[in-house]
Length: 234
Image 1: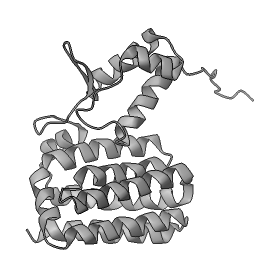
Image 2 (image 1 turned 90 degrees about the horizontal axis):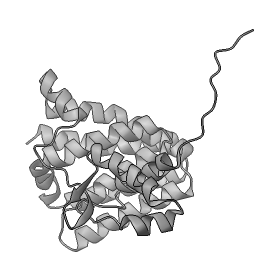
Image 3 (image 1 turned 90 degrees about the vertical axis):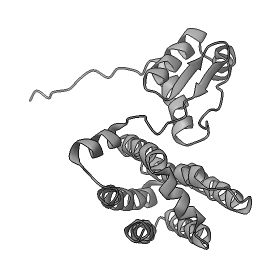
Image 4 (image 1 turned 45 degrees about the vertical axis):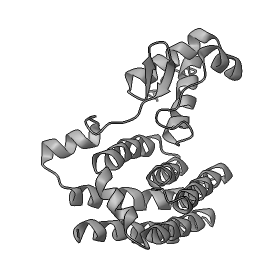
C-alpha cells in the first residue's frame, strides 16, 4: 500500500525566533508600544545570528505586530481604531452587529475553556494567574483592566494547545479591545463590575487548574453571558 507521506522538514531557525517573539506579543509579555531589545542583544540571548533575528523581526513587521521607528528602534505596534483585521473586515462585509460578535465569542471561548482544562500545563496556569494579578493590581490602582483581561483570554487560548485557536483569538481581541474600547470602558466603570469580572476570571482559572472541563466551560459561559447582557441592556 502506498501512503501519501511527505518528508519532514526541520523548522528554520528564523521561524523559531519568529514564533517565540510572536508568542511574547500574543501573551502580552511584550506590550503595545514597548521597545524590542536591539538585534545584537536578541541574537546573543537566543544564541542565533543577527541575520536570523532580523528575518524574524521583518516577518513580524509585515504582519503588523512590530514597527520600525527611524532612529529609535523596533516597537510592538499599538493597534489603532482605524486598523483592519480579519474580524473587523468580516463584520463590515456581513453587516454583523456587536451582538453577533458576542454570540461567536460564546461558542469560541466556552470551547476554549474546556480544551484548556483538558490540556493546560503548569506554565499555562501560571500565565492565567499572572493575568489575574495584573487585573487585581489595575483595579486597586483605579485603572481599567482591559489589557490584563486580554492577556487572560489569550492565556486560555494558548492553553488549548491549538495554534488556530490562538490566531483566531488574537484577531478577535485586537478588534474587540480597539474597535469597541469606549463600550468596554463603560463596562469596567460601572460600580461593582470590576470585582465581578475578576471573580469570574478567578473561577475560570480554578476550573482549568483542576482540569475540570465542564466547570471551565460553565464558568466561561457565565462570564460571556454577563458581558452579553451588559451590551444588550445598554
